[in-house]
Image (cartoon, rainbow, N blue to C red):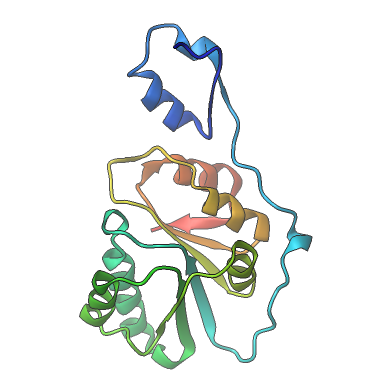
Length: 182
C-alpha cells in the first residue's frame, strides 16, 4: 500500500525518514508541526516562595538518561552554593534508574518526584515553574520535535533543553529564542 501524502512534525525527521523511502517521495510530503493549546487553558499556580523551580514532565526512560542533566545541576549548585534555593520537579514515571541518578549526584534534597498527572495538570506545573526542562536522548543529531517542547513554548516558560547540539530543538531555539541548549 502506498501513501498518497506524508506529514512530518519537523524537517530533520522528514529528511531522515525519506532517506529510507522510494525516490521522489519528498514531493508528497509536508511539514506540519505539533499544535499547542492556548495559554488560557492552563491555570498558573502561584509560587509560595522565592525558590527557583525547574520542571520536567514525562517519563525518563533509559534512552533519555537524565544523568547529564543531574551532573550539570550538581556543578551549578556547587559553584553557586544554592542547594536550598533550587528545586527540580520531575512529574511522571519513577524508576530505580532515576532514583540512582539522583543519588549519584547527591541531589535528593532538591529533586522532587511526583506521580504522573493529567495533561493539563502537568502543564499547570510547568507554567508555574521558572524553567521548563526537556531531556532528549543523547545522539549525534536530534531529529524529533517533541510535542512536550511545543507545549512548553506555548506556556511561555523559558526552556532548558538537554539536547543534541545538531538537532531540531537547537534549530528552533536558535531561530526563535525561548530557551537554551545544554
